[in-house]
Length: 360
Image (cartoon, rainbow, N blue to C red; front, side, top):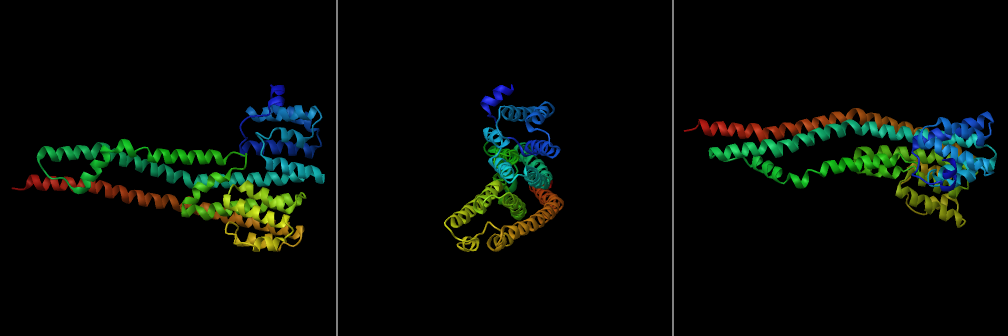
């Protein structure tokens, strides 16, 4: 199995959780001063599933004389390029352990952000799904029976009942809308857990909701600040560090603006000129200031290190607020809609029917 893995080195990208586990295994071996080639081989026997297979492939390559960076590069189908760049930078500066610890902080922050977003969305989606099922049953089962009862008695139906009964007749056409929306959310959620590009770009779907837009932006700003600081600490050139960190957020606008900054600096411009050359809306104001006026590498790293926990704490507060308030808001909206639906479909038509039957 190992030899096949050495030859192929393919497969689907690892998840963020798998990359965290692999990174911690490598970091522990580096701290202990244990040879990576033998240590990863032993880890491959203990790690579950394909994570163990990847560790064994890395071990086999290093036993053949390849460096850790070369072994990771051969696994580019499964290991994200950003991770390889951080390890390579740590090897170049002679402190791989520090680079791995920094990467571990970033990965855990990314995973915590993803978990916070998931917890904020879970309950409202369950309530909305139950409400959708209730409406579907009302339109396809109850409304047609009431409509038939009115017709058999020769009584006029209410307009609301007629509309809902007509919706029930066309339910075969529109009923998949909500299941398809749930499937889109599920696919975006699964993609956000892949570490191929730390695919937070799947989170842009959440930006369609006003109550999630600023939350996701704060988490992306925290990740960008922390990752840029990590890359600069490991002597990655400023333009490349900004580009790599932006690509890891998955935010298309942030990536375009970061590439514009990098292009300006590669042409010989300063950071202040690069940031001031156009309007940067994807970067938050504090990030724009830090990128433009962090005159030396050390001060810029310190500024970014200070910004990252601030953005993460602010995002965590918003996520907690959404998690607490959004279910209540959804229950109020769904409850009011259900009460109105029952009134229009059941109580008003039933009252009208009784009045007609009781009349002369």
